[in-house]
Image (cartoon, rainbow over all chains, first blue to last red; front, side, top):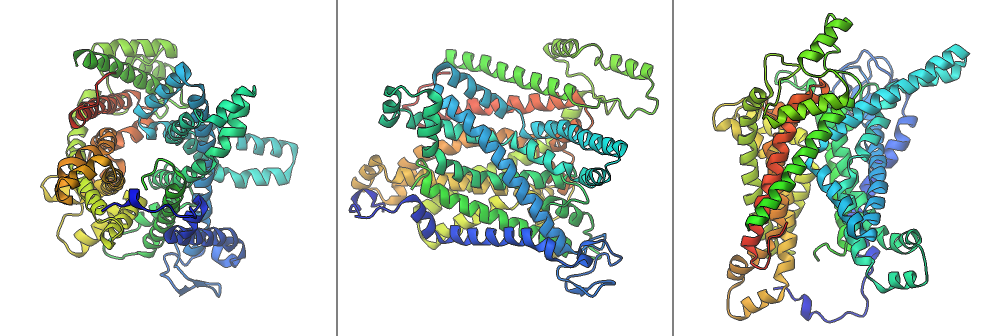
Length: 329
Length: 306
């Protein structure tokens, strides 16, 4: 039986952050994500060089000693004899980084779009929202792939152009850096492509909240004082939207990570020598066969990725329960 | 009602038109063309090919001639699979995806709604927690992990079901389950939250006051209102599921329409791509119309106006 309406008014109403802090799964998830981020940042530089390079010890099972160097491969090695633990952590860097940056881009676009649409109202609002509806009607994968195809060429050309220019001018350092960066340009391409696609839901949510906020008296007061629209948006509405934005940022990150891994799994995303969880899973799935199972190449990336996405979703849910005025309880 | 349908027809046609235009123009503006990998890529061969597949002239000329053909219901032919028209490709690839997506859709809507109802009626009990944690897990794990996982358990280890392929009913179970899992979870979460809101409302207190049991009150009064947000979500979901999933189809080795989008862009094969977008958009606007009609059926207060 619901008793919400009969509940006595408590003297102390917990604020949003307090609700989040009391949410045990959300806090546990935050701790887990912090740990993964810390490992991903500090792990690879601290690992011995022998683990990072390719070796002749391909497909070694977990906990086996290295082929030449006196090291232990905690999680085994891959087809190039590289340590899987190292690959996983550098993959975490890429996956989490793409998720964070992609979500941040979509957040900026979505917030601006939603705020302008909701605040302007009338015809502008109708036009902007019909545009969003229309973009929803085209499959998302189409835009993502078109962006990837467009940016990939542009960026590779730019880096290669820099390399050739440096070669001609005799800048050895720059040329070397450009050559080493070339295979990693795909990471930037993924960030841009996914960021430019994921903002639609964010725009809708922000617009909905702005529609509510702009009718409140403090906005009317600001108008009466003669403040310009942009100033009201920036000084009065944005602070009131910040927790909502943070909430949906947390929920967009796993969506972007999922998209990235999906594309990398299909071979359209991150490529060797760079790694992401999706590309590691692709490599793992390629060598799986019933006769001789190299399970670790599939199991460890799958476990790490699923747990991280779960933690992000738990955290996002906790934030939404605390901060989204329209979420149920 | 009639003016509503007429208006919707016009706006649907507009959406279809814009989506196809956007797809065609963007694909044609991409670097690289469909004939780049020709063995004899002399300029004359390229020109002849472009003329044959009506891709010569300026972008605007290509676009207007394509629209003219579309108006005559001609979807043109693929530039990659030379002997195939787009209509033939769609006719060959869509049925498997429709079947699989249809099953997944039924699973997502029925199982999802039931799970959400059970969770909401047992609010803050272990049943609720288990259902909601399970739902979050199902949302968080991508299909390209659940797919191989399901194969490993049910096909390789228990040997109950085939690994992949197409044909009998047993071939359908694993892929449709894999396809449906995240959406079952999403629908369950949506239904639970929506039902919890409704359970707090006044008309439900009235229902309880006149002596209905909780179960009767939910079944007769609450579900009809609580299901509205779910119905809104199910419209686009149907279009999405019915046009196929590339991951599920490749994991289970099924020849469906899911790969049509990705492969066509890779090959710069613009006409099958536009064909697939037309199918997707048509399904989308159709199911959104169904959603609106269902809305007015479920809640008599809602008047239809476009």
